[in-house]
Image (cartoon, rainbow, N blue to C red; front, side, top):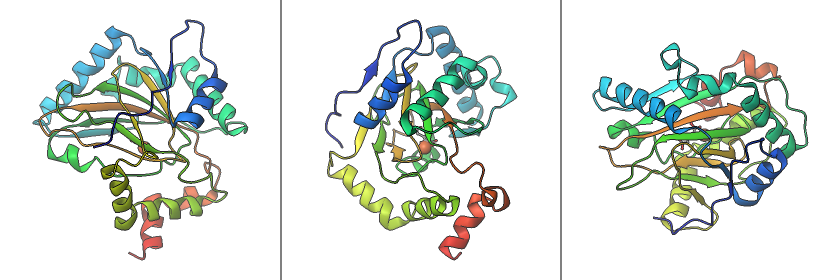
Length: 256
Ligand SMILES: O=C(O)CCC(=O)C(=O)O
Ligand SMILES: [Fe+2]
């Protein structure tokens, strides 16, 4: 178990909008930034009801939705990536953080509803995202037992020039050796590994591409659910990206 985290960088709601430069600066300085109460209580409740129903329908087991799904219509998971203000905020944070103009690139959204033994299997797996900025809204976080904190090792890799180099990074990080060394950092309370305590309804930002990150495990009888909105694939324009799917290229790199 890690000790208490460094004080979480919080940015309060200021009504008129946020300063992307300030948010990018906080991510750089502390590993992540938080906008408190970004999703209002009614919208959060709708999302929680949706997640509870989905898990119940699946006999208490883990469900992961990739991409927008019609069944989510009416919830913030469905609406946020369509809201111009939210998309602009994400693109502006990218531009403030990298100094580059954000290339055209769709949002890749994931709704994770972790529960049961499969939920555990989907935890403590450190990875690099394909997309530069991760925007995360916790929907349900266990209030007892292990809360399933977000663990972030910032600046674990730079933005690569080539898509293939990015895939090699991902393959190396996925190797048992590297996973073990990161789990060791976790077990030994290594201060370089940042722990973000998640509160439902807040909006968390971190550099998904550059940080090695994962979520801590939760008890199997609890639900941990997060909505992720991934923005800006730095390699979107790469031809290779379109020709060879990631999974296939990973297998080629690993020689499988
Ligand atoms: O659910 C979380 O806390 C993180 C998930 C994540 O990193 C991802 O889906 O890429
Ligand atoms: Fe991720």
